[in-house]
Amino acid sequence: MGDFSPPGTGVGNAEVPVVEFKDVTVRYPGKGVIRPAVVDVDLTVPKGRFVCVVGPSGCGKSTLLHVCSGLLKVSNGQFRYLGKEWRKLHPGIGYVTQRETLLPWKTVLGNIALPLKIKGVSRAERRERAAEMAASVGLGDWLNHYPRELSGGMRQRVQLGRTLVTEPTLLLMDEPFGALDAVLRVRMQEFLKSRIEGTDLTTIFVTHDLNEALTLGDEVVAMAGAPGTVDQIDTLEDLPRGVSPVELRQTPAYAVHEARLWKTIAGNLSDDGVALSNPALEHDDDQAVTAATRSGRGIS
Ligand SMILES: Nc1ncnc2c1ncn2[C@@H]1O[C@H](COP(=O)(O)OP(=O)(O)OP(=O)(O)O)[C@@H](O)[C@H]1O
Image 1 (tube, rainbow, N blue to C red):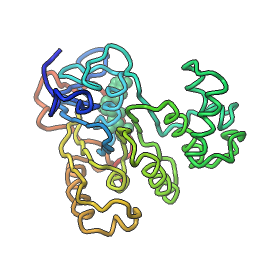
Image 2 (image 1 turned 135 degrees about the vertical axis):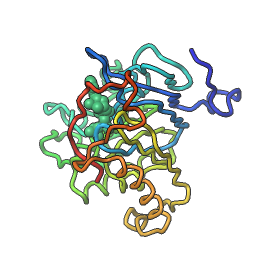
Image 3 (image 1 turned 180 degrees about the vertical axis):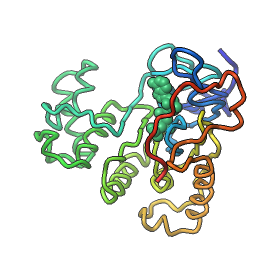
């Protein structure tokens, strides 16, 4: 175990960051020499912080989330969750993806109660907690409806409820609103913000959409290149909070952050929106490219 201490250690767990990456490189297992997915990542996320990660397709955003969840181990460097290196999956993680994973044969109540059932919570308690959670995600009148009877935004709220009902310490969100239309997306952003604000929940939210990141985040982490590196971290303390996304986008501070982050990301994009090879790492034998960069969407 390495010896890197979070700032302000020694005054109890409250000050231990929820997530710490220190000089982290990640290679996916495979045959031959595999180019790393991310290199030299340093990132600290304190308790209660909402961090958005942006960057072009293939720069390693999801890879960072996999490491946070414990699904993927680092190849070099150190990763700590709640101040510890863990051998197994990390406890207290909620993971919401763009892909819908609701069980079609279960109702809203049944879907939200499912993780409690897996944990062995009694039937009466899980029904009560699931019903409370359904109400808190605005679906109190839809408890006995099935996913097919709901809109895309409602289904995404069920997914969110199913995750939050477990009372996670760390919420990981990988493009959760990517499939929603523009209006619904903004509504869901407002909804998520209102649901999380004032709680201790720590959130890492991956998105291709810079506007979404600036609307939601306390901090935006811009990744670039392939293998991916963290190229910029913008703290958004100067942005007004408690205003609508539309009002927020009209403020001068917003424009400054947007321009700066865009420059970081777009400077490292190919014409078709995929992360460009990282020139600083091109001549390193260890980094020889055999892993295919997945084609996909660029920054919007
Ligand atoms: N299971 C895997 N095995 C091997 N390589 C992988 C695997 N998953 C991802 N990669 C590679 O790791 C790199 C980073 O992928 P990752 O999915 O983290 O990027 P991303 O920024 O999240 O992309 P996108 O925005 O398209 O989802 C890519 O080169 C990708 O091909």
